[in-house]
Length: 269
Ligand SMILES: [Zn+2]
Ligand SMILES: [Zn+2]
Image (cartoon, rainbow, N blue to C red):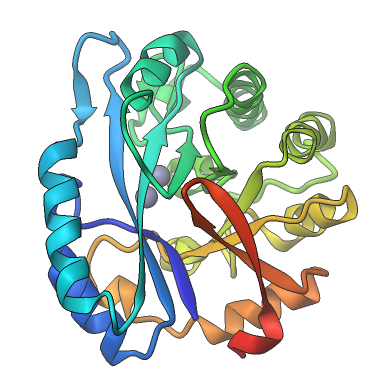
């Protein structure tokens, strides 16, 4: 099994160290892990809400790889927060740094963290979800320096509505546009399995959207726990391979030096 979305002490909202993750992953018999610590510019673009100390991160990664690198495949990744107003600055941040994998995620819309209640106060559900999806589309249409789109329907985690669903048929125009950009650019789509923690079913995005990406000939699907604490990391990932298989995927994707590599799901089950 492989996990392509893991936060460590280099993300200020995480409570697990890189070394503990390695130890736990080896103990669980995982084949491969990819660290994806946060880097999120503040909406002003002047400072970071989630800063990544790239030098320390790189040193700690090298140290852990020295200890665990012969027991498990390790990858150095990043979860980069995308904001359509700040794409130049984000590109600037990435340009002199090396990662195996860059997960592009949208955490802010209209300068507001989706986590914050005030985003939802002046908008109906339809408006909030549409505005969020339009921001995703803007970001990925005008930005190329990412490999895979993270948790496509993350707004469902934080929105205050009783019905948190984002059915494909209700938002099909904008979701199809997003998926087509991903397919045209050869970018991946993440199946984020934190969905269960938020009571949002099996995956984020939900299976209807994963299936649609596959129907559009999308090839690169990654599987990530989005874990910030050890208990979130230690989940049964096997059932999710079956979910992906049921959505039409025969392979999941790993990345080295920003290049995708397809791993047959059969080999991991
Ligand atoms: Zn995220
Ligand atoms: Zn994350």
